[in-house]
Length: 95
Image (cartoon, rainbow, N blue to C red):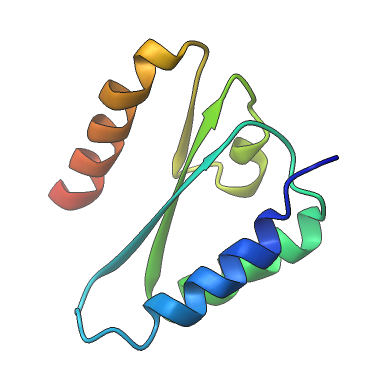
């Protein structure tokens, strides 16, 4: 069974959107394909439309790169998790 990424992302967007911060970033960590690519894709597009930055990190799965081709990376070992997360967020914050 695939994780309900799209539904989870819709919930997160509802929580993040009303926050007063001028910059909003969501980091998705996943180890597989979403249960519904279209639901996840639509949630990401809607979040971007509202100015929310969305990044993805795949753990032993490149599925996230299909949803976020320009804002994702994949790791093959858990020891890579912290360095990959910090590098991705550093890149986002420096832009």
